[in-house]
Length: 76
Image (cartoon, rainbow, N blue to C red; front, side, top):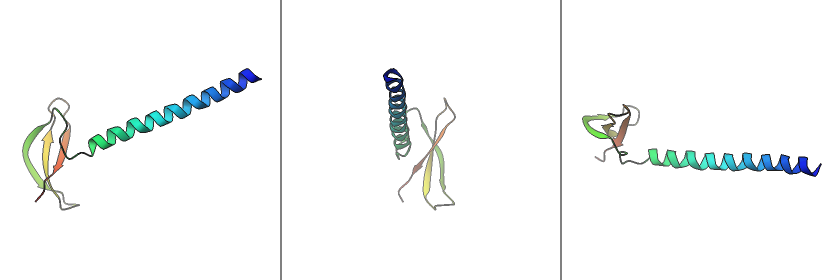
C-alpha cells in the first residue's frame, strides 16, 4: 500500500512540475514576441501601413528563411 501511495503522489508531482515548466516556457515565448524590436534574422521591408482596427502606424519586417512577418509599431 505504501508503494502504491508513493507511486501515485510521485506521478502527481511530475504532472505539476511539467505544468509549471510548460507555463513558464509559454510565457517566456509570448513575452519575446511582444517586444517591439524585430527578432534576429528579420529584414526590414519598405512596407509601412496603418492598421485599420487600431489606427497605429506599423513597419513590416520579413524573415526570408521562414516566411514569417513581424509588425513593428512606429511612433508618429
